[in-house]
Length: 130
Image (cartoon, rainbow, N blue to C red; front, top):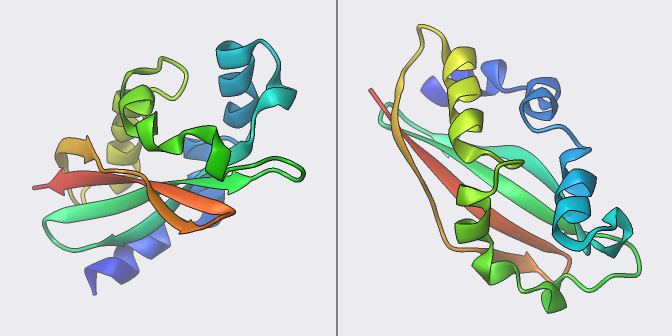
């Protein structure tokens, strides 16, 4: 039942507002000096949740002609948690605002990168709820 509430709050439009598509280009521009050097696009997805935890994923989708597997995505949880553009702490504040009276985030942590396929990796973002 609570997952239905989360799905109604975190629609595709809301997720795109929380983590705009142009963040990928901005991230690679800051990292490499050229957005075209990026191997993947980053998006935010709702992965699951219950009364105590809300699960999101930062999805890394391979760009055409690029190699996601070659992109060293396994170090990204540490990079994302500190990078000022990705701003996970700020993202969590925005998520909290969307949650409104439904729940309140009391903490967060990033999990290890998971390879769902050669063209899609995910970095889990878990929020503790009260």
